[in-house]
Length: 210
Image 1: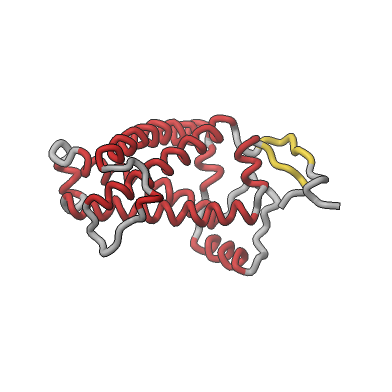
Image 2: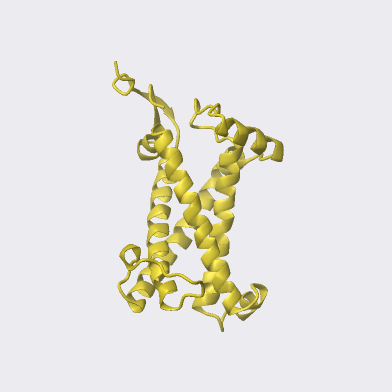
């Protein structure tokens, strides 16, 4: 019999409601920011390629900027809520720490050999912890460099700290590229372990599913 048919809900919570809501709002914000950002990049590319128009958002530069700014505020405010609740609940320290080089190396090798256990979805392995901490830092860098691109004169000190407007633009672009790479790997892992998606939707794990 198919193992999926035998799956039964696990009553122990995996993700609290606030975490699931902020996760999906962040996902929406990132999707809009990336696709509208690609359209903005196409208006003045600094690398020898353009993003296909079919996968960009906004239709024209002005429209893309409006989408980008709207999603920016969603990401910033939702990100603050996510971080504040993680700190206040103690989830930040228990879920994402400690992270050690030895632990990352061990878990990465285990994953490559197909031996990394996913028995307990409540516990992140060292590779997951490092990846999630990296993406939090990456989003901070993207927001700060985005402020320079948005209000370069008003954020002159920040602009200088980031090496000037043009260098901040490159930081912003490659920060976005790193975020997209994270999302791609994240989606691949979800496809390999589909019960993680169910846990993020319903907040609970399902026994009998990988």
